[in-house]
Image 1 (tube, rainbow, N blue to C red):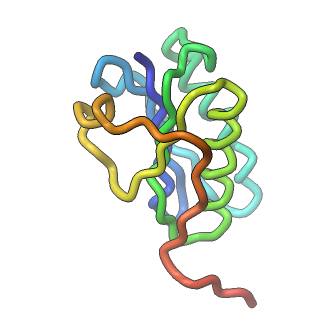
Image 2: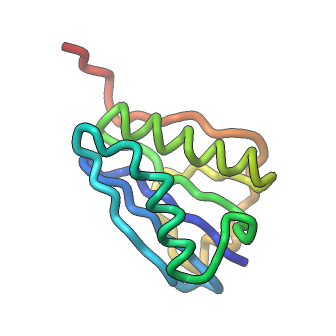
Length: 124
């Protein structure tokens, strides 16, 4: 079982982890400065390729939500949902990072997830 864990809790970055047999086998950090939001999908592909894995081998996607920044939260949720829908695999939204052993035992979600924000938007 190969799981993709995307953590969008940091204000300035998204962490992408590939988990196989309760071990992190690939990991990358995507900085989210202005103009770098398009790097999330290529980074997921980079992590998969580094482990000789492909998107088709993913069995679940997990998104740890609650980023400080609207764009990070929204884009992470959109990417997780798009992967789940296109691959026909479950997407789970999480409030905190679980232990690696817990990941495989978490209840399988159905449907899509919504972006979760840590505070009210500030526009201006």
